[in-house]
Amino acid sequence: MDEIDALRRMRTALAHEESPDRLAPRTDWRSGVAPRPRRSFKVPVLSVISTAALVAGAVVVISVTSSPAPDEGRPVRMGESKGPLEPGNALLVAATNVEKGATGKYWHTTRITGEIYAIGKSAADHYKLESRMQYDEWTDSRGKQCVAFGDLPARPWTALDKQKWEKAGAPTTVEFPIPEGTGGLFLKPTRTGGPCREVGERRFLGMTVKQLAGLPTQPEQLEKALLNIKGNWEAVSSKPGERPIRALKGDKRVRALSDAAGTLLGVAPAPPEVRAAAFRMLATLPGVKAEGETTDPLGRPGTVISLPVETTVPLGIYTAPKQLGTYRRQWIIDPDNGTLLAVRDLVATPPHGSRELPPGDDGKPRRLTVDTQPDRFHKRGEVSDYEVYAKAEWSDAVPR
Amino acid sequence: MVTARVVSPPAEKLDDSGIVAASLEDPEAFGELFRRHAPRLHAYIKRRLGPSLADDVVAETFATAFRQRGRFDGRAEFAAWLWGIASNVIARHHRQETRMYRAFARTGVDPAEDGVAELAGDRVDAQACGPRLAKALASLSAQDRSAVLLLAWGELSYAEIAATLDLPLGTVKAKIHRARTKLRKALPEEKNDG
Image (cartoon, each protein chain N blue to C red):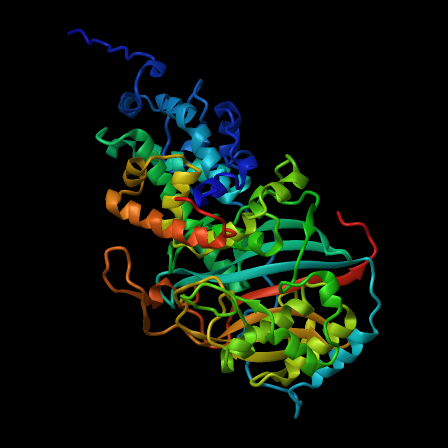
C-alpha cells in the first residue's frame, strides 16, 4: 500500500458527495439571520443557490453569546508571590491531597484549549480574539475511551476587545496573518454536541493504562521512567524518528519532562499516587518556580507554578521555528484538591526580530517575521494560549 | 427603433464558461454552476476540514466566485478556477485543519468525522494508520498539504493541481514528492518492490 492509497482510505465516510439540493440550504450559513448584504441582486427563484449564500462573504451581526473570559484583561504579573514560597510548596501540598482522592470507573476530563489572536494592523488599533476547542474524554481502566469534540465559536478576549470588535462592525468572520499565510476565525455559533464516540485502546505517552498504573510513585523513579520514553520530544526538529527524553539536554529535557508531567496530571487516567509523584517531580525540575495566586481562564482561583519556555508549540510536529517571542508556561493548580486547573502560556518577550527558515521551493531563503505572529501586539505578561480543565475527575457516571 | 431581445439558451445547455458569461447579465444562471460543481468540491472540503466547516467554506468559495465572475476569462477551466478559490479559503483554516490532524494523531479519534453517523467502530480498525498519517499531514506546509490532498482526495491530475494552485507543473511535482516522502515515513515499513 503506498501513501496515496493510505490517504484514500482515510476519512472515507466524509468522501460521500451530497446532492446540490441538500447542499444549497446548508451552505447558506446565514439562514435565519437578518443579512446586511453589500450588494443586491434579484433573488434566484429556481436556482439552487440562494442569494444569501452568494453573498456569504458579507458581514452579519450575530451577538456573541458568551461573555469574555473573566480576569484576563490585566497582564499577569510574573514573579509575584505572596511570600517566601518554596518552589515546590504548592506542588507538594497538591501531591499530598491528590493521594487522598478517591478513584472511579472513568477518568473524565473536559478540556478547552484557546489561542489568542491579534486582529488589526497596529498595536494601537487592534483587538484580540480567542479561538476555542473543547474535548471531552472518558477513559476506563482498560484504556477504552469515549471522546467528544466541540468547535466552540471564537470570541473577543476581554471586555475592551469586545468593544473594539463591535466598533469594527462585529464581523463574524475575521482574517489575520499567521506564519503559514492567512488564518481565519468564525465567531458565529457552531454545530457541536452529540454523544461521545467509542474508541479502541488509547495510549498515553506511549503507555497503556495498565502501564500507567505501574509507573513509579516516587518522583525520582518516575523521572527515570519518563526519561526512557521514546517519542518526538523536540519543538523543532528536522530529524525524523523517536528518541528517549534522556537523549535531550538542559532546557529541552526539562520542557519534555514537564510536558509528560502535564499529560499525567491532565488527560491520562494515572492513579492518584502517580499524579502525586508527577506533582513532586515537577517541583524538582530546574527553572520551575511558584508564583503565587491567580485565577484560571474559567475564573477559578489557583496557585501558579511556572517554567520559562523557548516556544509553546506542541512537541514533535514542526521542522521549522514558528515563533519569535519567548514564553512563560504556567500550571495553575488547586493545591487543596490536588488538581490541575489549567496550563497557559504568557508572553515573556514579545515577538521581535526575525529568524531564518529552511529555503522554500524556489530555493530562495525565507524568514519568519513578526508580522506573521498571532501575538505580535501582545505585551509582556499577556496570555498567548491556554488549556483549561473544566473537569478532571474520577467518575462512575456513564459517558455521554 | 426596435430593440431585439436576445433570448439566451437555458443554462443547462451551456458549458461552464458560457454560464459564467450569462450570469453577468442574469445572476440566477450562476446557480447551475453550483449544481455542477458543489457536490464534488464539498466532499473534498469535508474530508479536509470536517462537515460543519465544509458548509461555510463552500458558501464562501461560491460567494467569492460569484463576486469575481467578471474576472473569469474562460482561458482556464472553470473548475480549476473555482478549486483555486476554494484552496485559498481552505488555507485560511490551516491551523484548524492542523489541530484536527493533531487531535486525531493523539487520540485516535478523528474530529473531522465528528457527527458522521456511519460506522464508529469499524472505522478505527479499518484505518489503523490514520493517526500516523494525520500526524504527518499536520507537519506539512499549507501548499504541500494542498497539493498532495488534491491528488489523493480531490482526484485531480498533476496538471489540474498546477492550474488550481497556480503553480508551475514542476513545482507541484516537487511538492507532492516531498509530501509523499513524509507520509511514507509515517506508514509501517513493508517490502516494497517498486
